[in-house]
Image (cartoon, rainbow, N blue to C red; front, top):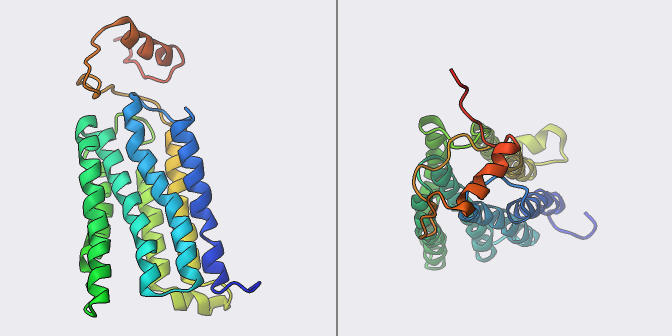
Length: 249
């Protein structure tokens, strides 16, 4: 359509573009709720991965082949690893989530590079990438089930999981979906469903409030304790109702 091959598969990447840009604005524009500034980084990596997915997936779908497919898969691993790290930060320990972010990004990238190298050698092995993607999503679900978030809206993570599952179903039944109306394929709708997962994270960050502050000191190497600066950082959210206080019995 309009001289663009696979037009709808290319155009549907606008969902990733919009959600990725919106997420970065929320993270760095002060619209998201974070107890500590350093908590922004896993979410920033997630939205950067979503944004890069829009660019690289659009590039891949213009002329699909294995050489360009590597650029389609690489940013998706960035998004997955950023999301896992963000939930470790929110639900288990801030410092642990931040420390694990870079190693997870390296492992994710390695799974794609390994597939690309074996594909070039004529024995393409996508199994490590598939396992990494699958277990990343399972890990996010387990974190949601087993460890409560320090913030409200923690259950919104189930919507993220749901949109991912729907996107995989649409991808699996790509041809069957296309056969229903002969216009839109399952793969096109997969892009839109996956982009909705990004929008869900945007909504989560703008709507959540802090429930249980991190028990350990601020993970910046400096333990501020009860300094005036620390008090000033906590008191305003209390006044604005952003931190829930226990009711007096």
